[in-house]
Image (tube, rainbow, N blue to C red):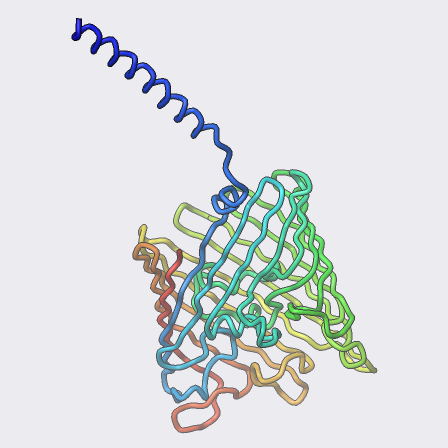
Length: 370
């Protein structure tokens, strides 16, 4: 009798225990996530860390001689930047907070005051429809082939066209997907690289037409407007073509060409610069690829100064060949690079402190992406 009673009691306990556990599991599965949990689950963290070593051949290595392009101008061992990108991607809305620290980052936000010199990008966006996206805030430029982050460039050093085109904009832009292949963008923005505020009460317009296939894309870019004090500078117009195609499984070819013209305030000729660059790249294995950037860059009527040698009319040009390897070790990429800059007028100096038209240099960049 005692055995039967005990067995019946254990059966009841087991039965109710199973019911309780089942209800508990169901309640846990159906418990809604908090708003904070949902937000955290959709926040993405990415970025990079980079540094480099640079050496001049047959020229001083005391930081007095370097190509006048962005980010890799210091000699010896030098710092790039730490880049941290926080992004939230909702069904309709989201944001990007892109923060930079270090020399490369400071150069990238050179028109910002001290309080904002860690902000590379800071914007919100709204997917109004499946075809229309609005972006408001500070975003990197849509113009040109190269970008600020070293993870987005094959070469470690940068081109003249990139260095003297705009880096970033603050304003409102609309991206429109016209079809699966065609896209368009329209923007109204502060003067280029004035990302914290607008000190001139002038604005520039931007536009882009894009064409994309599975093996490549082409983008025709425009900007127009007054890039400074209206009484001191005239409006600037730029047209820029950026394109890149996988010609085979291992061979890629990129092309960038640009033309910039600034109107004079008084009688005279417009000034500016133009150029073209080719980016052939060949992948030899899963870990190694090699590529060359060949660039021709020309300044006219003193459109830029202290960049390359200019003649008495303010004209000058430079031809640059940059041979770069990319060796990947997990998330780390080593970028050994040989570069030759040749100007039309004397601009560099040699070891004897004599003026010369050419400079040869070596750079080893190290970029870690996370």
